[in-house]
View 1: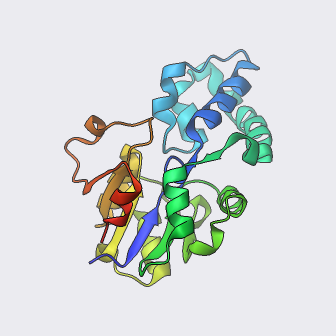
View 2: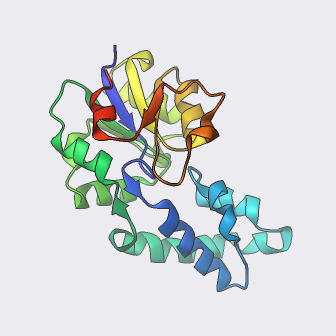
Length: 211
């Protein structure tokens, strides 16, 4: 039986992948570095330094720290301008008064999570928030989900996760948690074939049916 509902952040509660990618792309271009449009799929669910380490060629990698510094100043400094709520999940959280404990487990920074959940008026709904600063290993390692379970005081097997990325789903499954995939327009069912997902979220009814 589920006692907690744990949300990933980017791509589940907020629509940030495309604007984040655009700012990274524009910043890299200012250094005459082209980040291909199709590489957005490699970015979703991952921290920026790892993403750039994969898509930049060796001669470009010495510029990664400068690109990240400028990207963060623009993107994180104007975060509410770039990021929009995902209405399905944000409205569910706003209206939820049920028995499940709600939490966030994300590789986003705590400052970004706190600013956006406050901006969208949902911060008080979460009993626990675990961010990238709180863990030593990132998804698909299960640490972020296991730590969230500890903070909630709930066994991992009694936690259900809402994810949108492959590595996020893998992290949740590795934590022995049931995992549903939110279909957000950037992912599709076939990506998750072969993984033991509990189901897919398309509507508020799908969220309400989780128990």
